[in-house]
Length: 396
Image 1 (cartoon, rainbow, N blue to C red):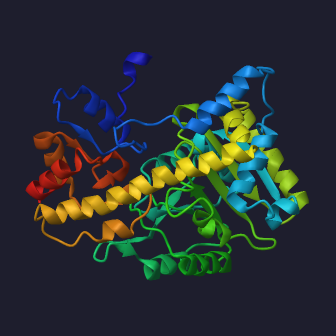
Image 2 (image 1 turned 30 degrees about the horizontal axis):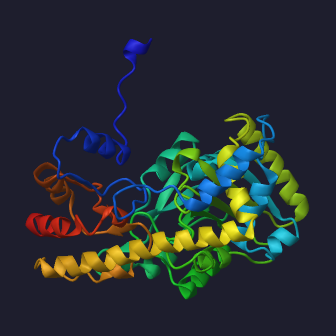
């Protein structure tokens, strides 16, 4: 039977990482994969994480299974991180939740939940979006469509086109939004634009689903909740998929969460039972270590303060590299106005490079960029930024 199985195409992003590792050229630079890197090109282990792990190792308890929905202290802590400790949905017990294996796991649980409970729903995704989004929902049997988001002429949000497409959605459909640090464009709505989007979505009877993977990487831990909180209204429904790979640098621990905000506490109980059903038939219950680390940090005042400082360090480095890239492109005489890169937020920048130009960067200069032209700004350092700018100029 296995001899009849055809090889699947390589992942659009992870496949590039494999090619990068196999590239023998010493000058190679990887600006493709979505992983934060420090000035030395390393993905750091946060000091607050080291301390939390030391405390957990010093006082071991059990390795028994967690509940289907995960570690309760963790779910409560990360819900408060996203919504606010005094948020109305939490105080009125309108939130069902699940600890999930990363943000991708949260998205898949959400997709299976939608497929099982709203079989007529279409999930609308931004054009462009993270390449794995369509695959996740297709694997769950959920149909998808795209809505306008990026204006290539202005390198800005196409709010008018986006709202027009919201007007085409059917009541009961789902709109997938990026809570902050839009992947791949780096373009986020302003707080005022978020309110207009939320008003339009709820007016159409559409369910918002926020992929919230980069809290703290745009403008601040609290500031980055503006989009999510635009949808938090009495009785309003929403889904939120959180990830803590980036802001806790816990990539391989797979730490995520799904939140479902229901119109009432009674409805939340029914939703919780359906989420549990989805989880049980998938991975049964989540792993413990990463969630224990996050819960320990968020539950300790000194560790939380340390974490917030380390997130600020990562954010400031990313924003600093944005400014340095714009300067380097100008210094090397690269034609065009690249000031839009400084207005983008998060780890990624939609550079405007075409697929042939991206291929030349890889083949001729050993610089790896996603085919869409998305650059991982966190992969830039003071040592490689001039070469990157120079080579971009050559392919242009």
